[in-house]
Image (tube, rainbow, N blue to C red; front, side, top):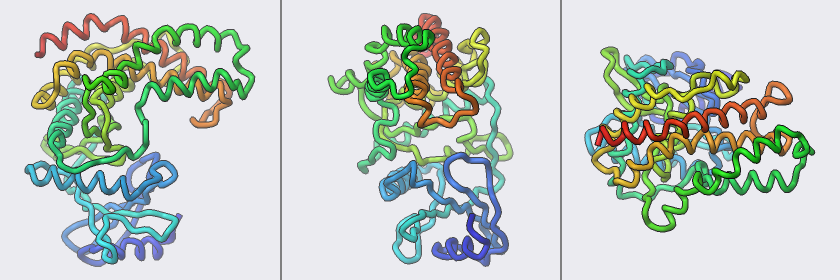
Length: 355
């Protein structure tokens, strides 16, 4: 970690108002290093080191964020404010190895970790409204993580893992059983990419990391804005809808070995769907609305495929705490997928009641 003097020097590349009093860690993010910069001026600031091992095109990442936040402000919405670098005018500074940015700290704002119907509905409305704000953005945005939620790619990666069998795990009976369980659903789960190629399904500007704690509230409980914009990019609305439900609607954590306890919570689905359609109804097409239950099934399936491929490859991508960790995660997500699939008729009926 940088020394206080080094951090002050980095922050000094941006046009901060006031003198820096203190720089200290902020939050518990897993990707970027985030720090609070306290000053004697009117504002405090958030200093972040962008993880360019994950976000390899920082120029594109900040271009996406700059275009989106400017568009939201033009439309009277609330959003994050990033400061330009004094030297370049760009909203990041780099020494050629590390990349840093500064945003204004939002006063009297709070995030919540709570996942219940109330906050799920708030989340649905916030992320739906966020997409609606960006539905008419005139700028061209790019994929900060190419093919991030591309199910066809994830399916190919699984087939490649099976063929290579790098860790010699294909002989395990459970591996064979899981593969036999997953493969019959592959074609159905890849339909988003096919619909896109056929011109039926559009790509939108999506958040792609829809968690309850990626919203900020004021001290009266009103939603202020959506935060954590690094994964903002063109995608299908299924990304924002399905990814939230994959974690929020599971009755247990994604690596809980008690698969018999896994279920898909319809109260969370209904709350999030109600909020999301309210926030996004101005632009959603009938095809997008009709396939929201598919999105709820797609994301546990996709994550099961990713965990499973990593297990077959010898655990090279996800961090594990014990040898079968990825296999346990796979079992969990497969169980969630089947639980969601069983509730598709109920999900369709609820969506129909909303529209």
